[in-house]
Length: 274
Image (tube, rainbow, N blue to C red; front, side, top):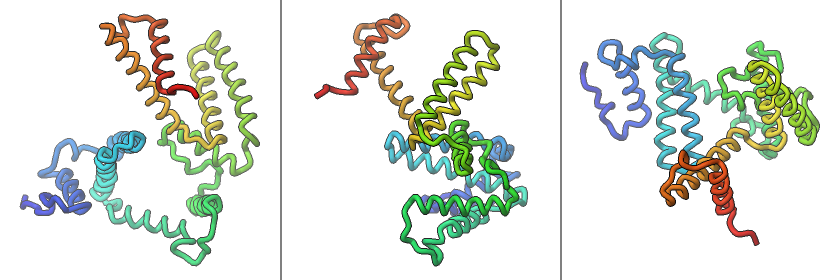
């Protein structure tokens, strides 16, 4: 195959990336692994790369963010190339479709509507436009179109937002907290006396209501859990460091000692109280 100068151009940008993907998928000269992939096999990588983008942002690592955005962009190019190979659509069709959608959903920017709106009003307008789009697709149910492939916690929040717009919602967070207490009691009862599938069901119910509480408190539950994960990691690494100073590992310790070191790491993070 003739050499493509675009592939070797360090400033080739998106056209270069698309040329690289075309070569990787070439049935005669491409990579056997890339040739064998389809939408279903690539989808898990797409989800993983999106989470790695969020992780880089949470760590404020901008060099890593650049790399992770590249990995995510590769996923879009990969899916588009698979579609083009099958004669479904190509990358330009993907780009044009999202550009059309953005123009249609922002009449206050690209059209004649007044731009003098609050962010809240713009959000309501956005939802109205999306509802009209769903109607055009014959998605008439309130919950139609909430993607099944979303992470479960994110999908729970989206389902609850849709239901709330239809009036199916608690008026305030205090009632959600009452429901959490109720679901926690049901989970405790299930754990004591019911089979594992019922325990899992009750645990799911509790998580679902926790997601609802996040929505009422205007908290992003995914971001909150990422923060909690990071905090746990820091504090446990603090335990490991303190044990190492004493020539020990966590396996050589016990819960009482590690709990004491955890409290010390927690107090250290909080700093002196004034």
